[in-house]
Image (cartoon, rainbow, N blue to C red):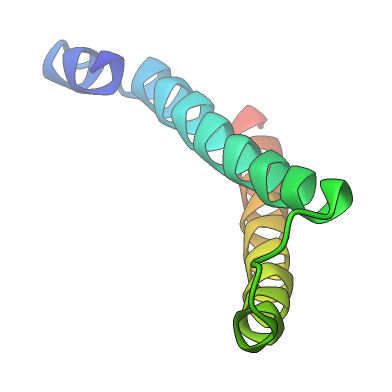
Length: 80
C-alpha cells in the first residue's frame, strides 16, 4: 500500500525503499518458516510424503536464501 501511495505521489526513491522493505519481510518470513519446520523436525506422517517433503524443503531453503542474497545486493546497490 505504501509503495502505491509513494509511486502516486512521485516519490520514486521512497517507493523503492518501501518495496525493498516489503520484499525483505516476505522473504525473511518464508525462510524463517521453512527453517523452523526443518529444525523442529516437523515432517509428514507417511513415509512416501516424507521424501517429497524433504526434497521440497531443501529447494525452498535454497530458493529463499538465493532471493535474500539478491535482495541484499539490490539494497546495497540502491544505497549508492
